Image (cartoon, rainbow, N blue to C red; front, side, top):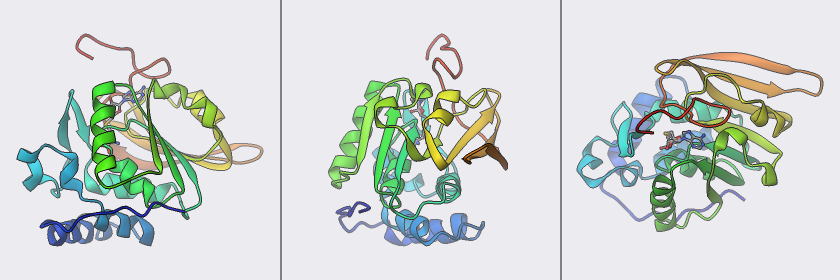
Length: 226
Ligand code: SAH
């Protein structure tokens, strides 16, 4: 069962539907579940109140601790790339605001999300609790190592840029499972999709993107200020 979130009516419904039409559907996202999830999830609640008016704009926004909530289109594109049908157990690395996790919660059975900064994870948890999002589990840890106790997963999504694909994440995919991850340098990356076949890994390149760094044992080294 995908989650049935309890959203209150809000004044952003129209602008949210416009966001989905103009930024997500118009650019080619077709998956009905993804489209409906993005129409429902109140994206403004994931940013601070002063930024509510920008929450449905076509760019990422700051969420504190030098981290960002991804651009709406990239959330739709990456979620569609996971090829979900509602029955999956999904691992997300980089909880951030919790927005991506909420969209996933409406497209999959259960979402396991890992965040390295505890204050960021706490904030996301509070937002998810505010609309009873009970099929997302958040853990504070180094996500480059995956979530071994809950592995294997049907799909894994990494929402921070990695220098290379962490082998631990590939190991924690089921046969037939999909991993979507930005890989590249610290400023620009390419989205990579890996499908784990019985005998081999199939790699697809999905295009350029920009994410904050994935920091951890199998990611970038921590720098001053991280
Ligand atoms: N998915 C988020 C956006 C992610 S921003 C959203 O919907 O808002 C990237 C997040 O990845 C940041 O919160 C950052 O702290 C986190 N992060 C970076 N390296 C990580 C790691 N090794 N493990 C877990 N989280 C990590």
